[in-house]
Image (cartoon, rainbow, N blue to C red):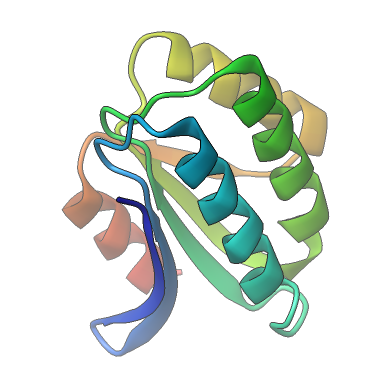
Length: 120
């Protein structure tokens, strides 16, 4: 089940959008919508976001929601990292990077992503 919450890593506040292993597309979409609501309440260029998509499932509709999420939250981002990007997810993320112009760092693990975000 997806989880969206603010976490502290090395004293740094990070919005953790964790959909690891979720195969329920509706829950994944709801998670991105909730994360969007939280993100746009933050000051501009202040948010550090960790999105973990390890073994999560996506559909065309979910990718569309993900694009909407990325576009609408870009002004609030200080740093953004994604963990678990392999296979077709790599293509999706690359298209989001081009669409939003956002600098999203890709990591194999959550821990590496959290470390990088804490340094930003």
